[in-house]
Image: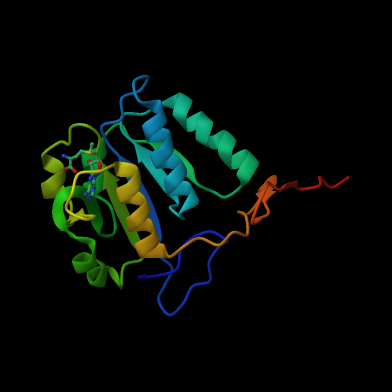
Length: 190
Ligand code: SAM
């Protein structure tokens, strides 16, 4: 693990807090909303601060807002009509997740001083410029799999496993149990 993360869920250790953003390129609005929704839910649950989405998708943005209203936290989906300028001006290392890249274990030590990082995941087709614009092309396992899996492994490696304490401002909180389901709802102040 390289660091602790944003939000209320982890205690920073010896290094400064790392703020992680995710950029999802190659989203196809109306065609695969489920996969990009899972990318966003994974980013949120595992400690990313925001997900830039190219092209934008107001329905998906609103779905994630609704998740935040119920389950808390300050994760947001930000439309990114232009992803290249976003990467060029980003103030921190850009990690492009691709099966062709260097193993994550070789890249992690180079991130130990970063305060911000951008993780880019692609879709069915990845624009070739991405390989050039990224500071690191990073692979999880050097085998083809999925943007959701690759993102999850990378976030846990960067930020550690999230606590089960619930997020700031949550209306609902899951109480972990060995069996069955328990969800508590925050009482409104009179
Ligand atoms: N040819 C693509 C590639 O470069 O990884 C595979 C496309 S895959 C359907 C969609 C996305 O999943 C990729 O853009 C990448 O972000 C992610 N992905 C798939 N396998 C990966 C791996 N082994 N390591 C890192 N990312 C991976």
